[in-house]
Image (cartoon, helix red, strand yellow):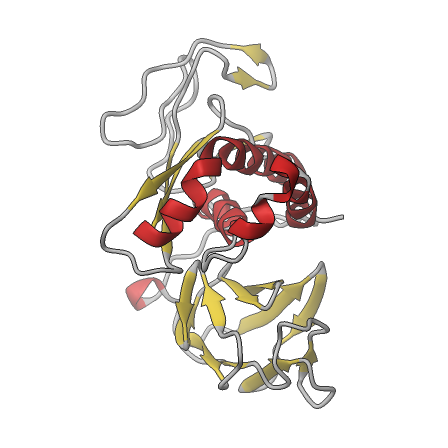
Amino acid sequence: MGVLKRFEQRLEGLVNGTFAKVFKSEVQPVEIAGALQRECDNNATIWNRDRTVVPNDFIVELSTPDYDRLSPYSGQLGDELASMVRDYAKQQRYTFMGSIKVNLEKADDLDTGLYRVRSRTLASSESQSPAGRRPAAAPHPGGYPAQPAGAPPMPTSPPGGRPQDGSSTAARPPGPGGGPMPGAQIRRWIEINGNRHQISRPTLVLGRSTEADVRIDDPGVSRRHCEIRTGTPSTIQDLGSTNGIVVDGQHTTRATLRDGSRIVVGSTTIVYRQAEG
């Protein structure tokens, strides 16, 4: 069972079902959970072959209406979100510099249904390394990852990652604007519930219909819900669906996709992936 699914099931039993009422708000707790997973992935720093450090202090900014709905349960919801981050980190073999905290804050510039996630790495006396306990330095005043005493210098940007299959890849310099190198072959795919679907055509239609390129069996998904269009960059377009799409925590009708973008349609989360080669 996936980490997000277990998170949803735990929420169902909290506070005698009061979270069922909260779920009617524009922002779904499972969307926030997915955004926290992405925040870990995007800010993972490789220290050595056995240690990848991710943020442990998160702030979720909500619109005033969504904050008012969720704030009465912020303590329990924050604990469940922290537990979800811990489970996800264990699955990905990430480590933390200190205890995990997730707090909700109100942001006046956000409309209902929109939210932002901010994160940082804070060291604490509870920080552990695979070799055992070591003293931790105070956090950088600018909010950057703190460095424990005796650790190797932290790189300003993570070196090339290592795929989960164990093979190594060298870091390549990006093309103009941070995109792929000109002329590079790009592989694109999406991941849904652990299943990978290659994108080998200019457009890919997702929906509940058997005529869709990728069929999603979800009552909250329209027959032709949305379409991924490959390019530089790739984009996703809503096709007039009933429930719309959420891309990286933002309700939208069209959005640019990058590696790791999370798309929510109905109650289904789709991860967009791309890589050179």
